[in-house]
Length: 368
Image: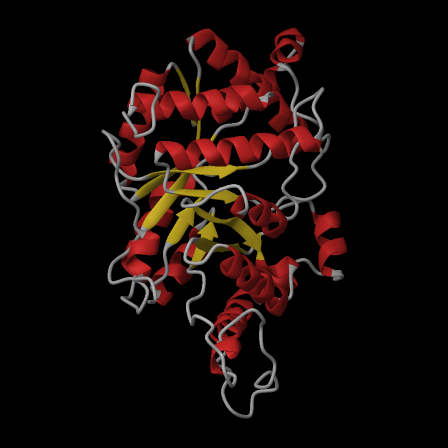
């Protein structure tokens, strides 16, 4: 039986949460930790998210960043599929211009075969890295080539996923495997189902495209907060009902960190902000410790950046974070909140998601 795509996209609200809650994992690597440590935390966090009723768990694609170990979302998702049973797993997202559409279709067809009915394919058109690294990934001198061709690449990817290139198309006899072609082959019993596609964005381009195609939309509020309301409005205004959705569905990525004490949350957030300063000034590294951030002498310009950056990071005690998330959902009308917690250690990140789940009374708590 083919799953209803509406059910795959729309999550269930648990506890007192205003909308379904989900997780965006950047697989951050802190100073003193290894990528192996970070990936073990990812497994622990995915299991916790599944136990506590978070709807979906996405990993992002980034490159050439020592503090982020998520350069290969499909590989990480395959690992998580082996360690979870129910939670939706997906990319937040695959940066499509970095890849041949056929490769993405094959990777996510494989993931769908591993975890049937619980894989999301979130797509972005940004490089997920700096210009030089993007050029190395794409083997191209002009970085705008990939972004400009995104709609064409998206259409090609959908054709590969559905195995429905028209007669006469040069790719008509090319098939993404695993995929629908196996079900139409003699003796084939392959499910025709494929992962639902989401478009990701931090501006209006993907918002409008997602609306026109009737696809769900994910907005990167966590690093482009000033564009959130305009992008969501554009998505809703542009929306045309489709076989996937009869009305708009938008989630927003939210940077949020809860700790047992407000001071500890502030310390962790400052360390993450210092890491962002270094990234933005061409000095990417491992996420520094809170102690290093406390000892760091911030310039006036850096202080201004931190004030602006942290204004969009919901942090504090569990009750304070819950209030901040509630307020953000009311202001944006988001259909889902996807929480990303950036901190130096994996233990702090796992604790944050547990505290948020407790604050909303999500299932699977210690009192149940």
